[in-house]
Amino acid sequence: MKDQSKAVYQIKRTYGKWFLTKVKRAIYRYSMITAGDKIAVGVSGGKDSSALLYIMWLLKHYSPLSFDFHAVFLDLGWPVDPAPLASFCRERDIPFHVEQTAIGAIVFEHRREENPCALCAHLRRGALHEAARRLGCNKVALGHHLDDLLETFLLNWVYTGRLATFTPVTHLARSGLVLIRPLIYLPEATLAGITRAENLPVIDNPCPASGKTKREEIRSLVGLMAKAYPDIREKFLTAIEKAGWLEPGPDK
Image (cartoon, rainbow, N blue to C red; front, side):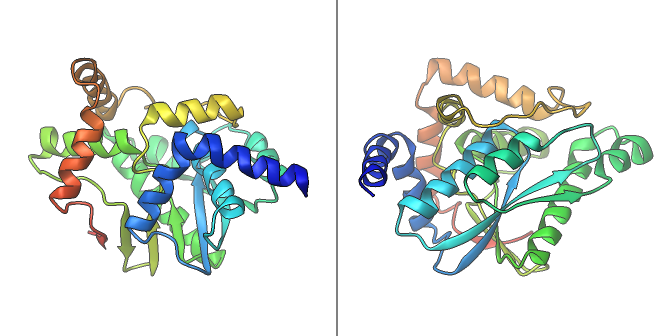
């Protein structure tokens, strides 16, 4: 018991200042988690979703929040071994579910669309939501972070002429689920740091379109902007929150 109390103290002392305080602030501000929630945490093997999984585990064990959660890995048909994720979950008593799909073949072999990302994202959302419902979950958590928020805004602005981005909480009327993004206040660099510090499992992305998307171009643009204005991400967050753009809304 003494060792456990010491561990809790160390976590609160170091991680609170580093990232947990911001995560809890986002959760409480947007009412992301309520007592009794059962949450499906989407994990892909990327650093962002692995960091989310670890943070959800910390919140469950070292915060007043009362909830249960499952890790859900979508098998897209690529030669990817989720064993590192499964092992990570097993060591922490996190239920781990693999959802088998044929999404990779549908997108790249059958449909062969010029812009495969949109179709892939749509199919992955559907598969994840279906798995969440079968597991008895009422919410789905994704690892989108502050950089994703800004990049999505710029993508919409540059390529569609819309001033829009995603919200921290989205009510999915068709599925009856609620989508939450607890990492909305954290920049990508923080998640990379957590992944390195905790040696979290990261699996290489074998997608043929990886690194060749419009989002990658926008990500490079954000990097250039941040060199001149280091706090651009935080200023963007402040601006859109003051404008009320991040209030929970329905799926569109």
